[in-house]
Length: 211
Image (cartoon, rainbow, N blue to C red; front, side, top):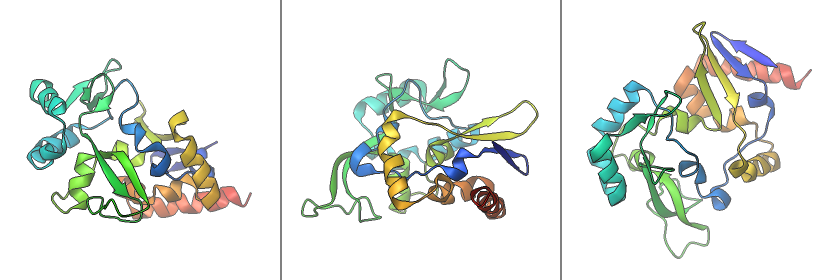
C-alpha cells in the first residue's frame, strides 16, 4: 500500500511497522556495514567540507588519509553520490566512543555509569553537532534510516522501509515500546519535509490504523 502526501509517495510500512534503535545491542553497526557509503547530496558535500576541520579530531588517521586522497564523497557503482569509506565498508566519518544511553551529551559518559555502551559507532558530525561545535547534523539519509528516499522520473519522491538484519533488535525494541517507525523518526522527517507534511503523515497513519 502506498500513501501520497503532496509529491511524496510513502510506503504504508513506515506508518505501521515498529522500530526504535537499540544502541546497546547494535552499537551503530549501520555506519560500518555495507559496500558503499551513505547517500548524500551536492549541498551536503559542501556542508561536510565546510565543517571538516571541526570533526577531524574525531576521525581515524586512515579516514583522514582517504579524505585527503579522494575527498569526502565518491560516486558508487550505481552512480549515486555517497560518503567515502574505509576498508571497503566503514564510513570515513565514523568514530568510536563509549557512550551512556541515559545522557544526551555523548561526550559526558563515564566509566562509573552502569549503562555504558563500549566502542559505539558514532557519526563525527552528529557528535560535533551535539556538542554545539557545528550547526549542521549528519546527512539526512543517515538521520532517516531505515527509511530510504529515492527520486522518481516523474519528479516525485518515494520513501520505503529498508529491512536489514542488523536492525532486528530495533524492531524488537520498537514493538516493546509500541513505537511506529514514523514516530521514531519524527525529527528527521520534519527536518526533511517540514512540520505540515509530517502532520499530514500522522493523519494518514491514524486513518490506516483505524481501518
